[in-house]
Amino acid sequence: MAVRQTWDVLLTITTTARPATDLGFLLHKHPGRVQEFGQSFGTATVFYPEAEEERCTAALLLEVDPIALVRSRGKSSPDFSLSQYVNDRPYAASSLLAVALADVFRTARAGRCNARPALPGTPLPLELRLPALPCRGGPELAARLFEPLGWEVDAQAVPLDEGFPEWGDSRYVGLTLRGTARLADALNHLYVLLPVLDDGKHYWIAPDEVDKLIRAGAGWLSGHPERGLITRRYLGRRWALARTALARLAELGDETEEQLEPAVEEDAPADEAAAAEAEAAEAEAQGDASQEEAAQEAAPKAKPLNLRRREAVLAKLEELGAVSVIDLGCGQGELVGALLARPRFARVGGMDVSSMALTIAARKLRLERMPDSKRARLTLFQGALTYTDKRLSGYDAAVLMEVIEHVDPPRLTALERVVFGRARPQHVLVTTPNVEHNVRYEFLTGLRHPDHRFEWTRAEFAAWATRVAGEYGYQVAFEPVGDDDPEVGPPTQMGVFTRDQRS
Ligand code: SAH
Image (cartoon, rainbow, N blue to C red; front, side, top):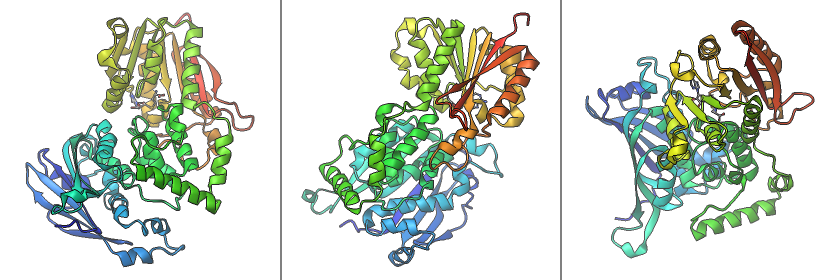
């Protein structure tokens, strides 16, 4: 049977966590009902092919109506951005699925569930299936994108025609992902990676696409080995936007300079490279954003802020003569790695509340293969900064690099007590964004990171730090990190706390 160039796309989500029917609460869709959600380009239907205590499957079926899709092309239409999909029929389908998924499962994607508040934070055994998914780059690309996120990937190319295997494979892949993950994370992985897989040509991209990408990628994209490819494809190969997004990901603590290079993807099939070239030529012919991009190309590349932050913290720790250091909220372990690379730091601790961050940290630090002498200097563990913990004591210095702004303001006093009151290291280095500097970021609407609970001005940070120092017997001094803008100050501010001799 020939594969129909279908306009229907199906996604199923199965869990075996008991009671499996809790999936209905998580998705905010009743397992007993069939529900339709009108989209400007067709209809999304949610139903449950099975809903038992031990196994429950939710299905999202998207039927794209080509006429509605074309009608939604007008410039004034809120879906103007969808016009980009019209010429790319087979490839558009999974991008449209991502759009529908974001709409239909909005609350689940945000990780909220009033009926079962603990559920969204709980990793569940999940199986996600997409029986026919347009995928430029084939099954290998699907594996490269999903495996680093902890998914077991089963991707099979769908033959063009089962009766004529010699015709080769179609551009469809049957994809099954199995793993244990929070449902919100799984939905966000799909939301970002489905359009990346189909790689539709995007002629027009709204500036808030960068924000959407950063938001949906929170907690996993900055550490993804393919983040460069993901960002470029997601943003329709607009290098200027991709560079902005990568720079913002860098702010989140995980970026290298090479990733900023617009490169044709390795292993890209020849037709893909040709398509990229054709697209570049086309953009040039139209004289559109490529000029701006060319200007950016020529500008000297600034050192990423996360690197400058790390260097500033390391230099300060050396200046203070710290020999043992603990990184609180160590994230994916960049600072821990840099500390271990310097033998003067005899003992290094790393703590984070997120097990996913620690798993990535362990991989990046190559913990498995680390020589014993180095391994012996390191203690990496999970913990929360708002609970007293003996393991935080006994270090010369503690670092809280871009961490306090992730803590709810009412919980900050607990953090202060744990770090300054109980652990009481000789020195504490705290870095946090200077919100005054945000006006210098192009395309930034709102705070720098979706998980930030606040961002402070220099005066607000100084007031907090001075109060904490006074309360717990420390002195505090302030230093800029990054270029100190005469008007709005540096992008990052650092407080250097030193314990009073007598206390
Ligand atoms: N310090 C790293 C990571 C910053 S991102 C860097 O600069 O690159 C903030 C980190 O703080 C995240 O990894 C998050 O999991 C962690 N975090 C947030 N709240 C925390 C808490 N209460 N206890 C411990 N870690 C926390």
